[in-house]
Length: 488
Ligand SMILES: Cc1cc2nc3c(=O)[nH]c(=O)nc-3n(C[C@H](O)[C@H](O)[C@H](O)COP(=O)(O)OP(=O)(O)OC[C@H]3O[C@@H](n4cnc5c(N)ncnc54)[C@H](O)[C@@H]3O)c2cc1C
Ligand SMILES: NC(=O)c1ccc[n+]([C@@H]2O[C@H](COP(=O)([O-])OP(=O)(O)OC[C@H]3O[C@@H](n4cnc5c(N)ncnc54)[C@H](O)[C@@H]3O)[C@@H](O)[C@H]2O)c1
Image (cartoon, protein in one colour):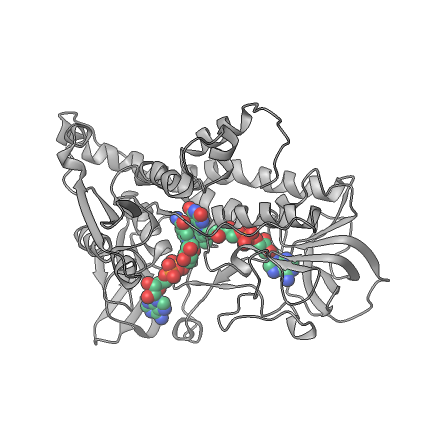
């Protein structure tokens, strides 16, 4: 890992270099260099660790930790099945080093490929616009061909803003100067704490509560809203909040109003007058798009109030030739959405006369907490608000044969339908393997009958990183009549 220097923008700027395409951000942005585009002169700009959030600090490492947590949980739960086992020890450093020992070389390899690549120039630094099609880049990282601290002017016929999002830290924490982690740092901790306080009650809070509690850490969650995971179907969110209360110390409807360090621990004062404390604090209060330091004020690119770049359904901003995708502009902060948007923008860059829209029809999501959660389509409340004649079915895992095998007492799958037409509108699942279980529902909602294998693979979302991606890749590997290597 190379150090990250804050950009200062002082000193001399290089002569301007012109590119056909500039990509800012190497998460899903890195996948824009498709065979159709690689003959163009392309610059890739990355200020952080190469490969973006999902690979380095997001989906991939968290799910590798979740898997280790599940192994520990299975051992603890084994006696229920007549299999006696005991958990002797959790070797945190070994788990951590195994995970990043696998991830870091992938990131470094991806960077080297772009630095040394025939068709691309890599700028390992911070980009900001100085005009609609002109960027100033301050080199902040070693590992590329440019010296740290140097500045470079580059212009692009086309520019893609794929800058992602970063954790938001409330003022009460920042101003108190207490030590804290975000999801960017907590996975590389030196040692497991005995007690962890998590501020926030969304997706990141739910996943890390599961990881750390399964590994033996006592977890307290502090959340402003009345329940956890409020974006879910109401019934599923309430069921999860009850299960969470049985596993962790869950404080809801409260805000942190003060923070201090006391006897080597972090202590949060809450708005109801109570106090919680822990050896370590994780702040998981949402992520904001990385657009504020991009110099967009020097361009015609517009942003929403929450900082997301305004794009049309093709990924075009208000400036012709400037595009955006993923967490920088999307209403969904999900990797499979960023990937789908990247495939769409890659196609649109190569085929300006045959633009394709983003596919935001049925965006699924999975939360790898305990128990797992997955969702696609309308919640019951959304369906009612949209005027459907709503029917629902809550199917318990425990009322099916495999549910008996699992001795499951909590898993549920809620289907939401339109009684007037019999159409499925949404599926919301809380239980083991939920992320895999909902895939056929995603398929049913997204595709009609009589589809080819490639249409089946590319006509819908595949939850990332679920086991179903094995099937997605197998489908894409099949040869179909008139195979053209479709880009979307
Ligand atoms: C802990 C965690 C777990 C997650 N788990 C899942 C999951 O299981 N499934 C799922 O679907 N999603 C998950 N997500 C969300 C997912 O990681 C993101 O939606 C996705 O990675 C966004 O991709 P992106 O390409 O838009 O942005 P990123 O991958 O964030 O890439 C943006 C890149 O741009 C760079 N950059 C920013 N500004 C500049 C600049 N001015 N100059 C140069 N470079 C710049 C950044 O350094 C970064 O590398 C998770 C996120 C987190 C934080
Ligand atoms: N499995 C996945 O797909 C996955 C996993 C992790 C993250 N993500 C993505 O990352 C995004 C960000 O995750 P997140 O959990 O940070 O955000 P989030 O929006 O899911 O949750 C933020 C939570 O923090 C609470 N909150 C906000 N300010 C607070 C405060 N001052 N005090 C107490 N609580 C406060 C909110 O009420 C909310 O419950 C997610 O929305 C998701 O799209 C996805």
